[in-house]
Image (cartoon, rainbow, N blue to C red; front, side, top):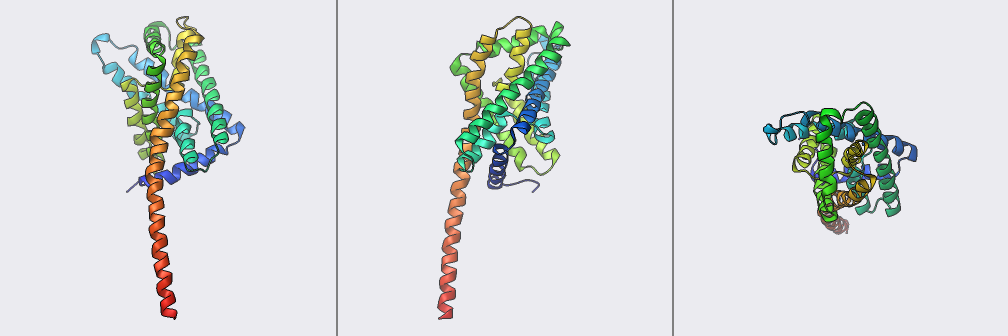
Length: 278
């Protein structure tokens, strides 16, 4: 089998979470900026694909747009980058394993969030606004997409954030279990495409599309703030708890049971050796 079993993925994830929590601030800042920019580029591709198709095609433009969005996470996980939604799962799993302190987890999450924001706004302003890639014939799609995000209530945005990072978290989890680039791409592609198709909210994607609408004069930074807070919290719950927490609970229990069995067998072995010696 060209991949890891779930309990092996857990061990890989914990190790990766420890590495992320010990990363230098300089490295975090650079890679998190790239992570925000890559997700923004994926969303920009979505808008450019889906925003110029006839309305009569129904949901087909959304399907095609969703199929290109995963390029952002592929670039991050294969090329190098830090993404807060992925770190919520990975560093969260290491915290559940008691290998990372809560302070280190909080510092990592906050730094990655801030520099993801800078990377996403960089793309939204320079590519979306200055070049105009989210404007002109794409204005309607940009504004409609952003407006749908900010129109959600706090609880709706929070629950949508949970659903999003349940899928993004499992895509990162599966990619850590794959042993080649092709397997990793497939592991990332489908869960991410599905969260976009469903319409769940991803905080870093919102870091791009809502500012893109703000630069068009259609929304405000207050709208942005009221959206990203509940979405961030929902993403944290979905990734850290529904993926990292539940898998840790399941497979650490299994590991503990195996260790008890192993200890019992070792005890009987030593008793048998002792009897023979006597």
